[in-house]
Amino acid sequence: MEVSLFYLSIYLIALGNGGYQPNIATFGADQFDEDDPREGYSKVAFFSYFYLALNLGSLFSNTILGYFEDEGMWALGFWMSAGSAFAALVLFLGGTARYRHFKPSGNPLSRFGQVIIAAMKKCRVEMPSDGEEELYDVDTKDCSMNGNRKILHTDGFKFLDRAAFISSRDIDDQKRGCRNPWRLCPITQVEEVKCILRLLPIWLCTIIYSVVFTQMASLFVEQGAAMKTTISNFKIPPASMSAFDILSVAFFIFLYRRVLDPLVSSFKQTSSKGLTELQRMGVGLVIAIMAMVSAGLVECYRLRYARKDCKHCEGSSSLSIFWQAPQYALIGASEVFMYVGQLEFFNAQTPDGLKSFGSALCMTSISLGNYVSSLLVTMVVKISTEDHLPGWIPGNLNTGHLDRFYFLLAGLTTIDLVVYTACARWYKSIKLEKKCEENDHDENLRV
View (cartoon, helix red, strand yellow):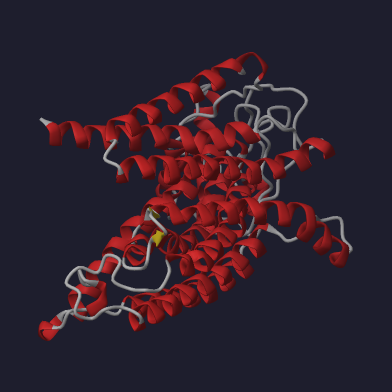
């Protein structure tokens, strides 16, 4: 019964987080009108402060709750977590009357599937050279579906344009006053699918970064536990070292918003503000490489000062746990550039009706990073323990080579950076029409 309740609890947390976190980022961004210069600037700033708020919550979790955990006061920690969730719900509901609400655009998966199926059904249709004039579109007053802005037609992924090609059967359906969405899709719906397909290579490159980020809650803690964790009579919980990550996030958000962004803007001498989202994500990958190199060097020195004959590696090294501070701080700096830039990028580059889907991609990369990290650790342990060797990551870290695993992650992130740079150069930004003044739902064929 206890085990069943435990798994029920953690999956309820995952379910709640999956419904809450992608949507609240999008919902918060919807409160700003990006066409208004002042609100548009505030919208960009929102993602930075949103991510800062997430980290401040983690600061409470990793310090106070971490202390309760070490003292065995688990029930009190759970009750405090439940109380904070209830307080968040009250605060959220308290602002309901002032929120801006937008009409949902339907299930993005079904709209995505309609384009794929419609294009496959017309795979043998010969497209004319000037095919853009013969693609199905909605009335200009309708401004795409459910009041969202239209996306300008692009030349990439030409096969998908078949979904919007008007065949004789489609004309007959239109005369009867019906349109089969699984045979004929508006060009804006087709462009939505193209946008998602262009985002996927960038999204895949962020997963390796999430593998690096995951080490902060796993191997960094194990490494810290094997170091000197006491100051006088006070024992520092190894998990609480992530406070340096959170303080670094707060510092670098302020530094970027107030110093780096205006400085880069003055050098660029253009209307754009600072670094682009793609450039910031690239900087985040570079800093992540530095974090892994730093962690590997710290582990080399930890092993040098460790007692080899110690059966339990906890506290076996005389090297202070505070030597971990640089690697935590570098991870925090990389988060500001990678995750904040990623939130802004996916929100800006996804169509109006798929904003939540874009935010969900960000959160999914973190989740997949956990799975890839577990798979990578399992592979490394299996390969490095052949011929009865202790391996790189044994139970007693003093007999292993955790530093080599950190350097391996640095190498993989370097390769990921090269691939990401190529994908970023290939990527073409979404091009939207201006927002509509009216919303007419009548659809017509335009040839």
